[in-house]
Amino acid sequence: MALVKEIMGCSMMEKSLFPLSNTRNPINRSHNQPCVSIRTRIPAVKAAISEDLAKLVKAEKAVTFKVRAVLTVRNKYQEDFKDTLVKKIDAFADQIGWNVVLELYSIDFDPKTRAPKKSKEAVLKDWSQKSNLKSEKVNYTSDILVDSDFGIPGAITITNKHQKEFYLESITIEGFASGPVYFPCNSWVQSTNDHPHPRIFFSNQPYLPDQTPAGLKLLREKELKDLRGDGKGVRKLGGQKILEILTGETTLLDRY
Image (tube, rainbow, N blue to C red; front, side, top):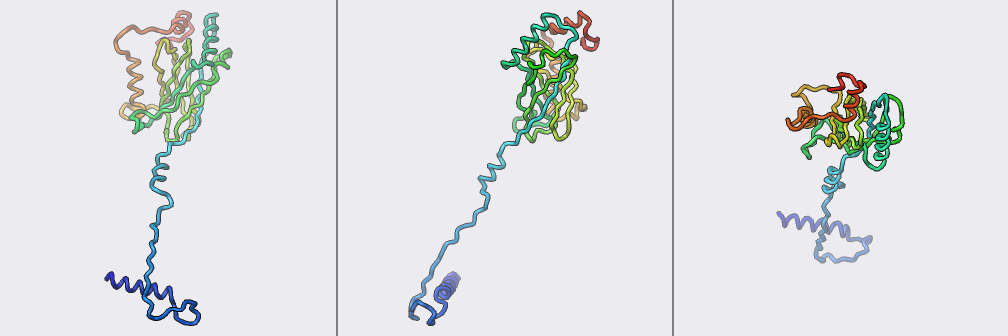
């Protein structure tokens, strides 16, 4: 069979090289000239996009985008000299890196890190500029970077590196396709000098215990453990909290 294909190939090649023996053919060839077989290799066709390039595209990092957090902080009605002095110190410390730090957490669980998805750390960028405002409530903003596959935010942590605690009323996150996300806080955020761990606040979306999203389970367990305590030591109130209780500048609900 292979011999037949070779003979047929030779015959076809001969016809293609020397179609006719007439006066129009410039090549003068005798009829007894042996058949010459010419074989050429056709290169293998490769895909326009190689497998390596496809793997590179697949491994490309997710695109990041920016969302805005608006924190509503409630000021004291009256401030003494000590409060004013500490506020000025915090305003100066904020400019050199002792900030209020935020981290946003998703309701989704990251299968790679085996931990909740979270944003990049962000700081309140206008604390020092608004430190002298005398209004009852002051809104502070922060720009937070998150990945495009972040999902829906469900929790946020606040780390207060200032000397003075502050009363955080609420947080609103804007910039997600699902719409604004609201975090009702209504709590004091102590300094890291008094409370070294970040405060955790959850969104106003309620969940039953068995329906809690995977990304929030660990945070809820940690928050519950912090509230219950470990049975050691003595619970203490911050200096600002004690002062407000003694002067009657707080409600009964805020005392607990």
